[in-house]
Image (cartoon, rainbow, N blue to C red; front, side):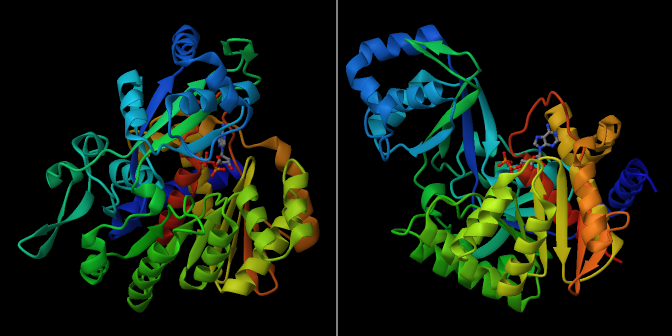
Length: 454
Ligand code: ADP
């Protein structure tokens, strides 16, 4: 069958059966993304009012975190000058207040849990239980309608309610995203490419704060779950990871005991100590999802420098290097499923066999293309609108390599006792939005796989 034929049949299979998936537990990070499209006149005036010299200092070198307005404006300049993304924690309350008064153009659901909750619950209709560290009215308003629940303690009992019915007057975890287009000019600077600077006014997600409901009643919460997805470990540091990791380990043990398959959505974790700790925790996961940069960063802490370099050397990424890295990771940790995604293709290495693995990643690629094409996907029915996005031709050489090396046939091969599934993705030329597209890919593939398992 052609790739288009395989795409169409995979989509129909998942659409038919996704309604049967039970509750998916999502932990731990949910926040509010306050998106601000920078205006050059406004930014320049703010810089002048604050003091040009003071601000310029920080455009040379980023501070460790943000304690003053000159540091905020200087860090934005740092990003503009280089066309590079950066994210810093905003420590000071007066600066947080300054950012709030500066305002934003748009509020969006943020954090992997928030994004996946809206996709799985709001778009696919799969019931989800979400960990939301702080539920302010602003945060609650960003949840879509649908079977999305948060645990609420009522007279010592856990009730599952929609976030808007939680009625919590908690804090807003705001991630201020200052976006600029390519060619954006301010003072003497011009942005070489579009990008963003993020100032996180958020004490909760950044330290992986875990709510009391999840600390004290996790057994009960987990008893409702059929699947689980864990994310949000990426901002931790060597100084603060120990306490949350203890809690996560305890949560995972409960899920393991109940035989709930848990997926880890890996995100780039700059701190090496934390990355190593995640690697040590991986045996408690059933599945892991990552891209080439993330896989390379794991190879590095496993002492596989050469392989890490290979993963980042070519475009498209060398599939033999990826397969080799996935083997090493599977053998070291015992995870049963590794889902790798890169621009152009996905691979899934599984301990088990079946076309449903490939079909689930095909569904995920269609969902990703629909998101890129439409921006927001209203329901699973619109995912099909991505069918007319062409299958990526640039990765034909990748498929040829896999056929030659592993005897791949229609995206399936058996290698060293594992199954390797491959698909070329559909790439949208002018995407409307790529925010959270990695989360869309991984959660659609993981949940989709369980929907169509024989
Ligand atoms: P993010 O953290 O931004 O979600 P990831 O690297 O996790 O980034 O996910 C990006 C993935 O999205 C890429 O690996 C690629 O497969 C997919 N992708 C990016 N741009 C497009 C596009 N225009 N059309 C379809 N898929 C895309």
